[in-house]
Amino acid sequence: MTNPFEDENAEYLVLVNHENQYSLWPGFREVPAGWTPVGPKGKRQECLNWIEATWTDMRPASLIRDMEKNKPQTA
Figure: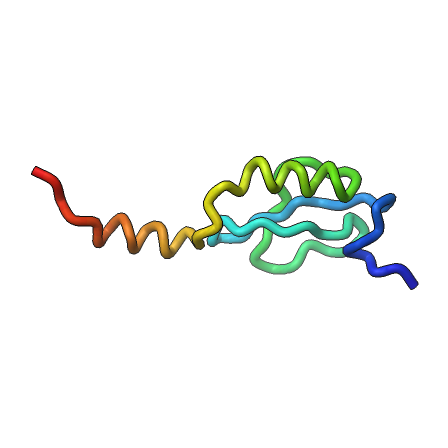
């Protein structure tokens, strides 16, 4: 059986979670709790290309918020 995450000809979804982390997900599978479909629905490489172009900051959203909160104030 082919791994459903590596089938170049299958249809995939791009998912995002509350931390702004992205994932590739097989289109025939139910979207897991905590994840939301975004971006294209299509072939594996199309979705991976979209994730690469979109997900430019790999830090979780909570880390970004904490870093902003603790950033030194400038005069």
